[in-house]
Length: 394
Image (cartoon, rainbow, N blue to C red):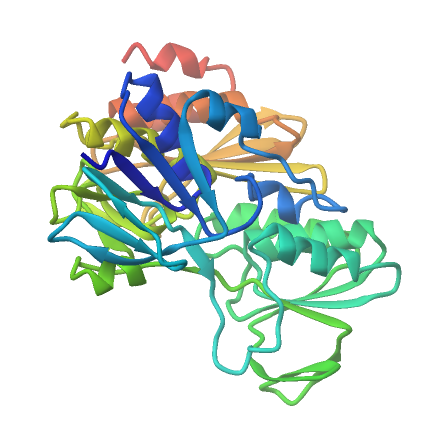
């Protein structure tokens, strides 16, 4: 009997390990992490200077729960026939159930090899320790990571330029109306935004754009998304298609191997989805643990994202569709939520922005509306006098 082996000691893997114990599993639990550090949360890395290292749990917690935490190594190969994981340091781990929670790595395009990326605490330390008043920082990519870093760097007095290939910011995850609000705020704070900017080349102290313009830079950071780490699964013959392919229980085609978090592609409302989300990693880690113990429930949690830039808080529940209109609900003090309904009047998504946590309560209720598939009249949803909680009664 080999027990449970989890490859990847990020939010997902750690949550899975703890859930196995919370569910009463008494066998061996081994958690394999590539970094030498104790597992930590990644969202604070781009939002604080100096980097705020927030441990997921103190070392004693792993020891108290008899979780064998192996640091500084990684899964090298899966021997499916013998249910054995071979580690990069030569050790082998037999397993009854294996969870792949290897996460994602920062994406780089050809020609961007010299750019730094921000994914780990080491990345954050190296970037933020080099930034001070007057530092010329160029960020390639106007998504969450790039814009959070821009806000943090402005707080340090850096001269910040953000280059975004699309014609607006955060195009993959945020409605245009909310993106415009963040664009205005970044410009007010002194960030130079270049939208529709195509990077041609990186020089030692400059970024060259396709239109021939040249932007001086002391530091260049690429924040152009992430790609799932799937090599271990692919080499083992498991299906990979924008992530390790799993069913609703987060199980691969091999009934003893599961995948969860940023590295997996899972079914959400009839379509394959891969999410890079702190909350999804937590939820899927817990769900995968229960599935490893035999639970047959499908993963149905509504996607949820957030970002903090300056004093603005953004929260998104559900997945917005490009072809559906948005309904605006005022929350007060300039905060608002944009809802989307499907053809039957059920809430599909909710995206809110305001100071601090101004939209947190509405987004939390919206999650439940989405999850329960409750039909809502547009005029009722938009009316600030409507108590959203009342709508949960259907």
